[in-house]
Amino acid sequence: MPTPLSRWLWHGFAVALLAALGIGLYVASKRIDYTWRWERIPQYLISTEGEDQTAPFDGFVVVSDDGKLSMTALRGSETHQFTGFSAIVAGNGDLVFEGDVIAKTDAIGPGPLLVGLWLTLKISALSLVFALLLGLVVGLGRVSKNPAARDLSAFYVEVIRGTPLLVQIFIVYFFIGTVLQLSAFAAGVVALAVFTGAYVAEIVRAGIEAVPKGQTEAAQSVGLSGFQIMRYVILPQATRRVLPPLAGQSINLIKDSSLVSVMALTDLTKAGREVVSSTFSPFEVWFVVALMYLLLTGVLSVAVRRLEKSYAVQG
Amino acid sequence: MNDGVLIEARGIEKRYPNGVLGLKRASLSVKAGEVVVIVGPSGSGKSTLLRTFNGLEAITGGEIVVDGHVLHQRSADLRSLRQRVGMVFQQFNLFPHLTVLENLSLAPIKVLKLTAAAAEERARALLKKVGLSEKHDCYPAQLSGGQQQRVAIARALAMQPAVILFDEPTSALDPEMVGEVLEVMKQLAVEGMTMCVVTHEMGFARAVADRVIFMDAGEILCEDAPEAFFGAPKHERLQTFLRQVL
Image (cartoon, rainbow over all chains, first blue to last red; front, top):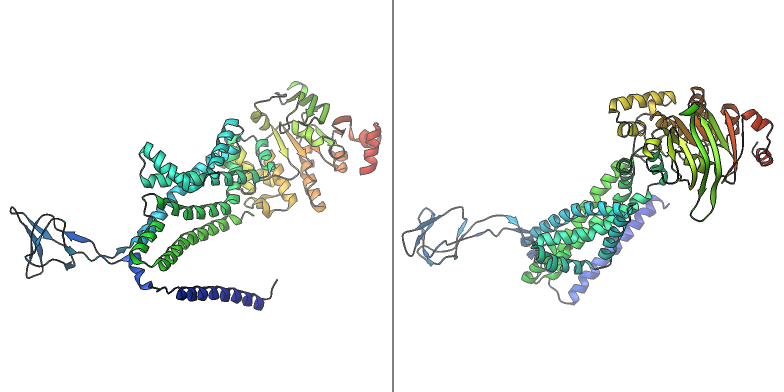
């Protein structure tokens, strides 16, 4: 065991190394003549740009003296009153056509990156729920006494683990999605859940097999049925064992969800790509995107550690 | 149950998939209220024999009748049999995720369909019997080995079995805890519980057993009342064994 002082020295050493790495990165970016424009990023997180109010028909703009905005139709006698705007774009008496921007509402809302983050969160959470259910069923199939259940679950696990997720996403999106008329979101959930489910199944199987044989024998000896043994004796013990690997797999799922950006889904990664193309600041954007993923996975691992602690009492 | 015979094993044989014979035509009968102790060197098939009595070990030949349930090569309904046959293991095998009270009441609630209150009442009475009244809310990991084994005995008793099988109940215990477990077992014997005990505790066999069985290499070589078994061993192999352990 290092002494407290030397321990802090080593921590300091690690921090110094990381700082050196950061400085190196900065110097390197100087060399390639990159202009950092961090000030461009916040507007893509929080959007202050309100919605546009557009002309509902062709006509003339009427701005009254007390600031009221309305329109009269070019043909006919139709009028339209605008409300809730913060800035008027058109001038009094302008001839405008249907769809032209007349005014803007001033609203603070989530920018594209936050919208992307929300989609990533939604698709990950939903996929995780299905993956856990699927993984539990298949994992039980793996340890089942029934040869058919064993064969089918082994087949599923091998096929899914043996093919790349990106290829699976393409198959689900283009083939299954087309056949079953799935939306891009549904296809994304299916692909991620099926993929992660295979890994969860293996974790569940390992967790069940790690429970000592004596537990099953003791449960059999008091006359519990096979289902009761699984439900009340094996699974509760397996749950504690699988929690850490399951947390790792859930974190993988969040990261893997970035691959759904190849479908027409604007998740965090796709949003990042769009922001890059409108800001030309790829370094800043990708750093921010990485940080946002890190935030999601960090929250998850803290939550799981809490859960593990609550189980620890039983030793 | 004819003339009080609870376990009747006739020529049972256990052949492992690799061809090795674990039990060779073993026959044994245990009457209600009897305490039968099985001794023998390691690997002699004592535990295997015991475990065939509640179907934990499948047999490949012969027949066992336990409390009216017939067990043979392909026995299906082991559940109703197991409700009548309690088992205490060398490694205790308590359920680590359940409290002591939950360990005792799980099967009575799920199998015997007792109400939670009735099962708890039964569990508390049994904990008092094994001297662990105040440990009901502990988890097994918080108990000593001896205490865990006493809980395990109480768990077997909670199903009110006709017979309890003890598979080397004190072999995994530190020496100072052996006594407390044997004490509980003696008390059960006095109360008339039918017991089959595999053990290395010759003192227990001598003091408590009605009959002692000697096994070697998968065979029952001899059986006798304890006085004769230890005092005047007939079988040559038994004499060697007793010289080594006593």
